[in-house]
Length: 118
Image (cartoon, rainbow, N blue to C red):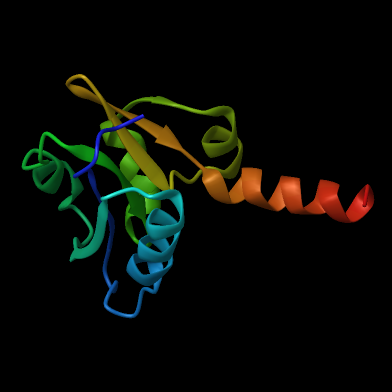
């Protein structure tokens, strides 16, 4: 687990409307984490350059459109769900590379399993 002071954010364009910072702040508070979650306007073709400025205490980035396709080009590896959905919605740093995930698919599948097996 990352130490306190970790940083995360949602990236995309448009992103101004995102409620992710509010939702993450509430979760961090409940979990007792001194983390921050922001949002950054990053348009099509700008992801790789933006990632080159990533802070050392980064927990990861959530991605919205139009970056879900572009993330495949920067990810050294993607999980099975991202490959199946053809969309990366989360980038996590590992050393000098990025790992791509699709957490939407996992969340959807888990919610369906909860409904099917109450």
